Length: 247
Ligand SMILES: Nc1ncnc2c1ncn2[C@@H]1O[C@H](COP(=O)(O)OP(=O)(O)OP(=O)(O)O)[C@@H](O)[C@H]1O
Ligand SMILES: [Mg+2]
Image (cartoon, rainbow, N blue to C red; front, side, top):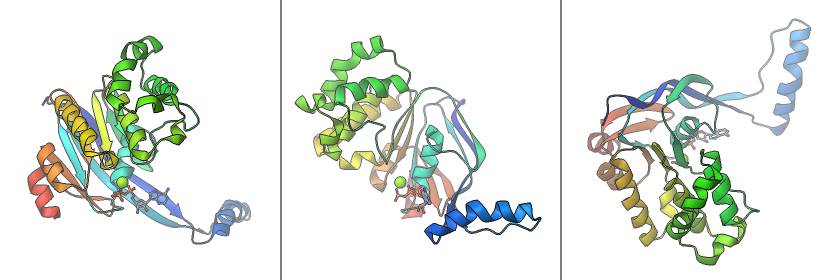
């Protein structure tokens, strides 16, 4: 592990606005403008919900870190902000290197296009040129191992097949940082083993952030862990200690 950071998250928070009634959204859109116009203090029609509150984490290059916590504790919210698919309400995130992610919601694939086209688009957004994907395409298809479905639209895939293809892509883009959010749970045993072999090989040089409810796996795979609860960081440190405290 190097002393340089791969990811530095400082005082990160995410607040959602919760509306009790659908029409409160409209009221919130109209009333505050009117009230400000007539110099009244604007009324608020939503409740604030802090999915993540003031979380700071420094992840070193080459570190493997697990993020644990109950359902709704903010794990996926944190990961999405690290990957840049969700904007923070406040706080900052610094990252170094190429991040390849397997997130909880969707793979970034377009369901109307076939597997092959999606491989090109997905690897493209991660910074690979068409020529680079050409060279790696056969390896990606072999890793995914979904047979002729690779030429069918993604919408015809099972969730395990989507995950296979998504993992195959992130395994071949020369990422520096791998972010994995529970996705492996939908894979069958043989594919999960293949992914774990890849992750262990990747860990030799790369940085890995791993979210899972499988505490044995987290303790086994990750040297360190962070425990989130109600959007706050409760504890960080050696994964065995944090995992046992959480359990
Ligand atoms: N778009 C949204 N609007 C309002 N609240 C949201 C939104 N997205 C997430 N939340 C809330 O933020 C909280 C954190 O959600 P998050 O998905 O990060 O949890 P998680 O730790 O990944 O849980 P799980 O283990 O179930 O995957 C939850 O309470 C969730 O309801
Ligand atoms: Mg989640």
